[in-house]
Image (cartoon, rainbow, N blue to C red; front, side, top):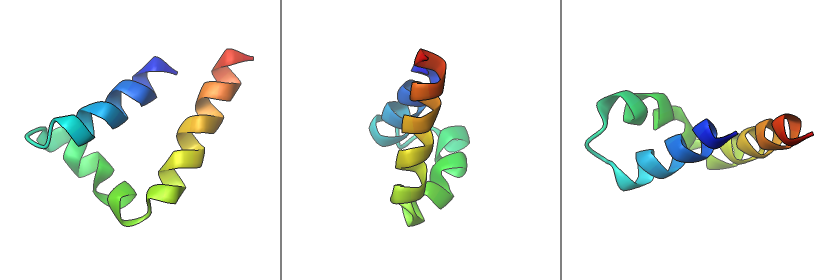
Length: 47
């Protein structure tokens, strides 16, 4: 659950990260698609 949150923050704070940027390239086009995914992951890990 922390990994998802850290990656999201890194991709937005670290534009120099090619690895994260490439992975989040699609998310940028559809941010709503990534938002629920991260939330669901956190909820699943929490419970």
